[in-house]
Image 1: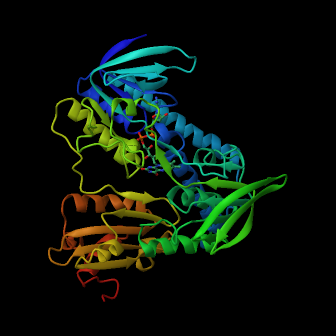
Image 2 (image 1 turned 120 degrees about the vertical axis):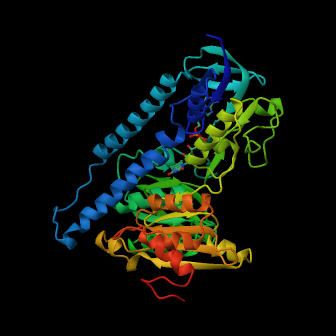
Image 3 (image 1 turned 60 degrees about the horizontal axis):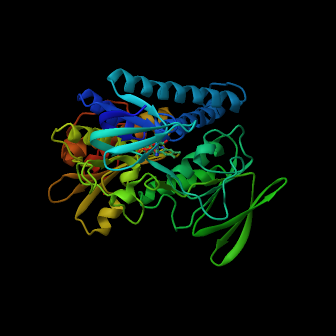
Length: 468
Ligand SMILES: Cc1cc2nc3c(=O)[nH]c(=O)nc-3n(C[C@H](O)[C@H](O)[C@H](O)COP(=O)(O)OP(=O)(O)OC[C@H]3O[C@@H](n4cnc5c(N)ncnc54)[C@H](O)[C@@H]3O)c2cc1C
């Protein structure tokens, strides 16, 4: 049924659904169009399912070694089917919750694939081929997200040659898993299956895993993969894969030499690409950069009046919390409020083992820029709480500007880095100095003490480690 709204949001991921809810809260008549399931990549096959599996991998490893600390569970056994049902239950609860929130806030849910006909109209085709045209009097928000990049020679077959979408729903633990791409998603999922018993090989084209992240943190992750018997092949190009009855053979090239890797499953994880094509943007003259990202200003506006873009489709960092924040910004701008992308930092987290969390630039990046900085690095191995939970690998690094004492960047690598980083986010948002962090009394015994000690270390007076 054709209908008219003030605003239409195209895509119901963490960008789109948040935007639609906020618009409805602000009294804007809004519809949110989604062709698959509300919650987008994040809730359905990204952040949420992957983290559920990751937490199970930790539990499995802890259970296996619990006898070391005097608790004997016997041999830990994995029931993959039950684990997948449990994970699917979380996804269902959350996606159902999103639908409920949209409706109860007054946003209209429209199911189908949408395409812009012009700057005010979207045609929606549902799964049965039914068509309707929706009109947006004030604004259209493009929140179509991103899709897995595929590479030639590794065409997905859904079972043995797969992407992240299939990897979070495997019905078994592959004996030999080859991950093409040593970035965030490949390592997170690769390490899950390694913890469950897969022989893991990571093939990475560049000289480093997780390019751009703190080099000390990357080393720890690489060491962990190797400690569990995994292989990391850097500066290695994946050429192709041959399907055999009893497995796969992956051809790779390193320093001009070709070799073969045996595998049962190949996970291709070389990145995500924005879904900016085939939705009518080009015909309307909406600016799209060479990488496919829709170009926006600080208010999430595109160059075409009335068309906004948010989330993965509008550029990096391709993270759920960045998408949601932009959803709020766009909604408020459309509703006539003063809003903008004025954050100081978007935290980035890598849920490897150990976890890596970052706000602001890394120490290495600041050094490359020639900035006059000091760093305090406090190891978790010196912290009572880390010892008591048996997770002593890692550190907190606080980097301060020597002239102003302002904290410029914080890296946390280690236990609960993903939770601890929120203090660092607040520190950067409030323009805290290293002294502010060092003077704030942190409770004992906690992992958070590492932040206080690292800040004191950057000032040269940490108590529980030697100052350089
Ligand atoms: C395995 C994996 C793990 C991840 N883990 C994390 C993490 O831990 N933390 C984190 O912050 N980020 C993580 N991400 C990234 C995160 O999922 C994305 O940044 C986030 O989902 C982007 O939100 P979005 O709303 O921009 O787009 P999406 O989540 O991609 O949502 C876009 C929605 O639009 C719909 N859509 C697209 N085109 C149309 C159309 N024409 N008509 C109707 N509907 C359409 C799609 O079906 C989709 O539901 C992960 C990603 C993956 C793949």
